[in-house]
Amino acid sequence: ARFAMARGTLKSLKRTRPSEKGKASSGTSGVNNSGASANSAANAEELDDLVSWLNCECLVSLLLVGVLAALPFNLQSNDFLNTRENFVTRAEDYYKSGALDKAAALYDRAVSVEETAEGHLYLAETLAHPDLNRLHDAIRHYERAAELYHEDEEERIGIWKSVGKLYTDVDRPDLAVESYQKVLDAYDDADPAEVAEANLQLGLSLLDSHRFHEALEHLTTVTKLKSANELAQLSIADTQRDLGNTEKAVQGYRKVMKHRPRDFTALTGLAFTYHGNGSYEKAMSIYRKALAVNPSAAEVDYALKTLSPSGVPASNLKRAPPAYVSYIFDLAGRRKSFLENPNPAAAGAAAGTGAASEAPGAAGTSAVEDGTGTAAGATAKGKSRPPLSIHEAVDHAAAAADKFDLAFGLAFQNVSVQIRDCVEDALQMKAADGWHWLDVLDLGCGSGQIGQAFRGLSNRVIGVDLSKVAISMARKTWLYRELH
Image (spheres, rainbow, N blue to C red):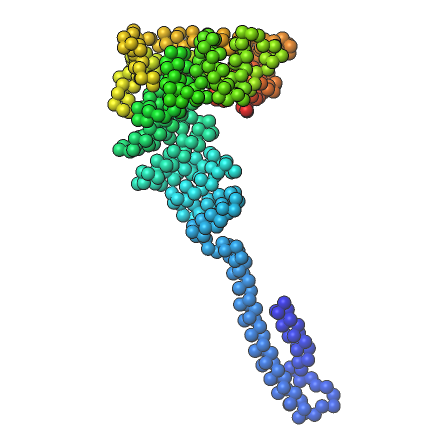
């Protein structure tokens, strides 16, 4: 604007400037002409000074505007302080105010400016917050932080624990096992309580991975290091029940109840063990004790009603409560997993023989104890028994599973082919034709039998089940677009 005004002034001045050819208005004298020429020369000199000054100021202004426009920051946002410390400080303020998305973005920028282990750690903790729940991204940054903490073993241990928990939350127990194994390997001369906790988490992750006998080894180590660990004792008893070892399971539950006679989890586990084994009178007795501890337990109440000899009106048993269904199918799923993926070395460990029985446990003893105080290769009276082959171990588990299915009325197992045949008859086409046009909603999908049967007809299959164990098994089939 200033430059435009200057140009307007110049034009007005040029209009009144006399002609250089000496033209003058008529009636003026030569003296007046000489005076006018002198004034014109002075005015021209002043004008030249003004133009030079204006041109210089305009040039400087234009340069300043160009520099400001080219700068990559906003002076009002403090981004001109492009430092890690500035980003972290602002991210902490956003985190405290609950603006987790903004906090994560600033922590990410801090890591981009200067990569540090602490930066990845702050970012991972923010991403893992329940309100943000970006668990896979959090795992990635935790693992990078562990790499950068290459000389700080204590920090690495803490990170591996966090990663193990997150892998459990995203249903990747196999990767959780790797993380907790790193924790255990890092404990050389650690406190026994810390070693016990590492063995416990590793054992639970192994159970989630359906590696039952390896889990028993670590859980047994926990009970040796910390005999009062109820979670380890209950997990051992549950595992023995799932493997069809009823006697050892009962011993495990009784061991917990010796110190905690009103432990609801132990009472429920013991009652379902008796129920699945066909010992209905004992099951009813323990169910009643469990209900006395927790009268609102729908799964226990329903199980007791199904066994009641006095007769229960059919209207009361039309629909099993979700808690009962999920409990039963979690049990059935774990049994099915062992039968489908038997481990020869593990079977030897269960019988007290084989390669696994040669491996020393973490406490320097044989890794064949079952957590009940009795070696797996000996009877309660100390007498040895012949070893079981892998086929005998599987047959033993299969027999227990058949009894379990009969006890809980799971008569509809392995009927996927018949269901598929019914659908094929209704549609007048065969799955073998491979049209792949059906969208299938598999309610009560279990471990994925229906998904496999409908593979030749389905465009996509969505599975829904109350059992977390069943959903985990169905996910491994890769047949389902979604699982809920």
